[in-house]
View 1: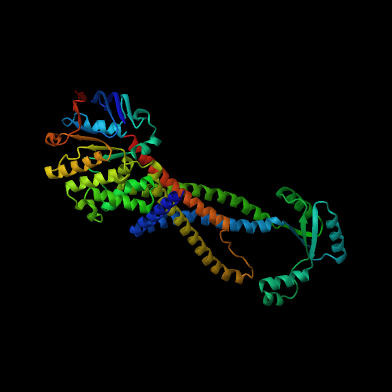
View 2: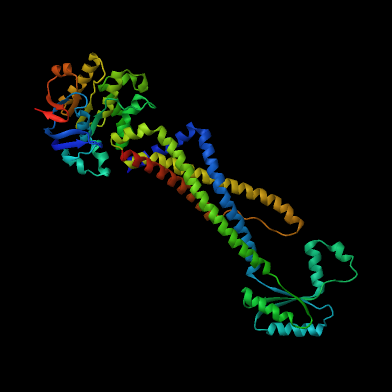
Length: 302
Length: 217
């Protein structure tokens, strides 16, 4: 056990030394792996962010009902009661036109503009939360409410978010395909790196086999090399994404200040980061394994 | 220790390297394998080390049947053998010490024990003072001695040497034969192939003569 551990440590050290003796090509390899991995991972992060945004909107779908300008307070009270009693509606909020104007002034900073208006241009409104949240029943509810007298305009607030979600599903598939293709590319990169190493160490491998090295002994340094390279590539990808997100958030904060909203791109979660590192390590290992196995098979079949 | 029973070996293309070979080597024997080049000496040694497999008959080494040995068991068979090659098969990217260290690394020896054994083996072949040199700086005879050091560092019970004095001058050849003799004296089993008759006259030992793949009696 102890000698086994020592042997593995020795091989690990040997691998790192080998990388240090060819720093430029090792660095380039790691960079290529990192950039390749960062493409699908970056796509994934952006999609996750868009997803959480639409979740927020779709999570509480609502209908806005804008009333006719000349509706009377009695009518409002009646409508309010009718809406509350409606079986398809779970909750009703009434937004008086004065409050709507105040909100508008507060949230958009358009106080100067609205203050100059001779009268409040906004109508009274109801915000209605439906019982059933699927697209079809919401559309039906909207049709029904539209036919009520004095209901000027009924708007389904989350319709665009649903369309966006359909689009997101499409984009997610595209990212998945990209990820699969690039995974093959990564395996190929490691395969080739290891193949070149094997060619330069051909003699050593053959001599080792002649004096009693098992296949796993011969594979081990190459596997370590492959998985170390994969792991470092994964770290580079993680760095690329983290730095890009930080930069994007910096410029986003300027933008969102202007619109007085508070939107931030989320970083990769811990579990996603770990998955990224494990996956890149695995791909490096796999490329190395395929490469050495193929070569060992060539030696043995001679 | 080694037993050949009606062994034959044909290479692809139909060339018969060995025909119907039967002999036995007891533990502790020193055997000379003679014959012209092409007589099948190398093939016979390769069969013992399982570098080649026989087409017919059985080869038993340490009780293991070479014809049926599994690939996974090969490394353990070879760790019990010391192989000395005519072309040395040294690694030129590392120094003498590391060349001799390789079999011990493969067998998983710990570091201190390995270093002791490597130095003992280098001392035995008279190269201890040059452990930091690289093999390219050695003469032909010295390279052959390095190859011997690598073969014996594992303390194998059987040593196989394929033309160890093949292209060496007489002094170097004698130096190498003296090393072999000292192993014989401590109980190792040796099989040495050679076509050098003058050498044979100087050393006593059983001789197996091959001619065109057949054993002469």
